[in-house]
Length: 158
Image (cartoon, rainbow, N blue to C red; front, top):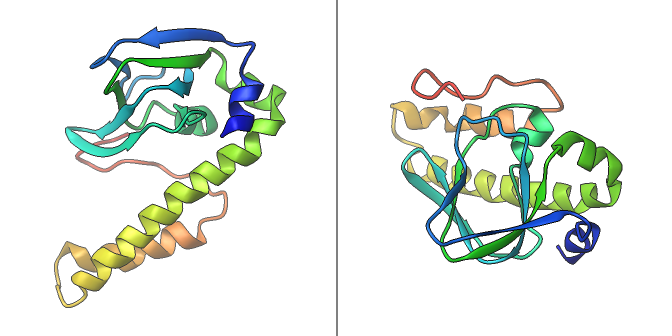
């Protein structure tokens, strides 16, 4: 992630106090944040998905890459400093050296989610309810190659 931080040194910095939401699920801000220092939590609805504290971590990248509203809420756990990207798509096009570390970060996340889904599928393989859909979900995750998806569900259209 150090290569990401090196590429962002010309960007404006922003400090955000502890407990502040700076990306809201469902909003389309056009902003992307690169963590310089601190710790944030990622929330999907009221569910805490993960904590991120690695300098160089990019937040808001899914919105940037897919041109969709933010898919999660991001909140500071402790005071944080960020580089702020105002025009996400332009920044990524103008800084191709960031694309490989970003791809690695996204691949790690996908790997973790896939492993988790496999574990859940294994635990509930004898169930005939909605857990039986895990196979379909895994198949979609593993085989999807650039098709545009419509994220969400009836409960959460984003």
